[in-house]
Image 1 (cartoon, rainbow, N blue to C red):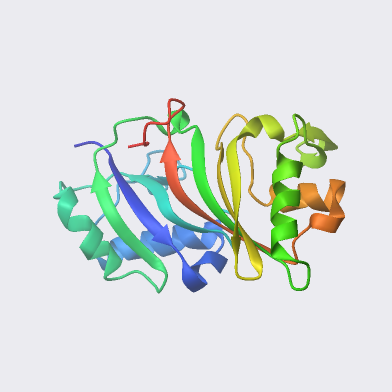
Image 2: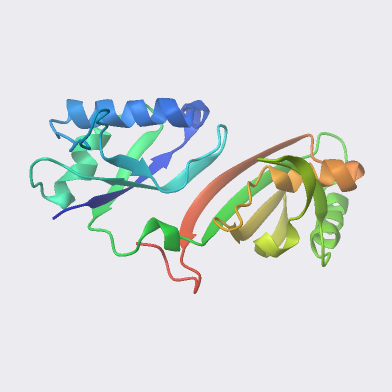
Length: 219
C-alpha cells in the first residue's frame, strides 16, 4: 500500500494546539509508536504526512483526516490503538484505511456550534438567528490575501438550523470546506458586523463529518 489515511479526534485542551504544533505532535507520535514515516527526496526532505483541512485554534473536531506514507507495510487496523496510546490528552485516532478519494474532493463540513448568551433570552435569540441566516445574501468585510473586501458568505452555507439549549442557542450546519472555504468563526463575525444585537457573548464550534459534493461521506 502506498498511502494510508487516518481519522482522528482533537477535543478538550488539545483544541488550543496550533496546526504547526499539531503536526510536530503527530510526527512524534508515529516515532513513539515505532512507525517510520517516509520522507520526501531533495535538498530539504520532510515527512510525507499531511492534514486535509487544517483546523483553526479553538475549534474541536471528531473527523480530522491525515494522509501519510510509511517505510514499512503495517496492518491499518492496528494503527489507531498504537497511535492513540502515545498521543497527548485530547487527540485520539479512531480509524485508518487506504484512501478512496483525493483531498481536493472534500467539499462540505458538518459542524455543531454553541452561541452563548449571558443575559439575552435564548428563545428570542434563536428566532433572530434563524431570520438572519435565512437571508439570500450575507455580505461581510472579510480579510483576503489582497487585504480586506466584501464577501457574501451565504452561498457557502448549504444548510443551517438552530435549537434552544441552556443559556445558549445550538447550531447545526453544513458549510463549504473548499472553494470557497468558510471558517465557522465568520458566522458570529457576520452578526458582529451586520446585526450586533444578536452577536453571542461566546461561540464555539466542532466538526463532526466530512462530505463529498454529493454529500457522500469522504473516505
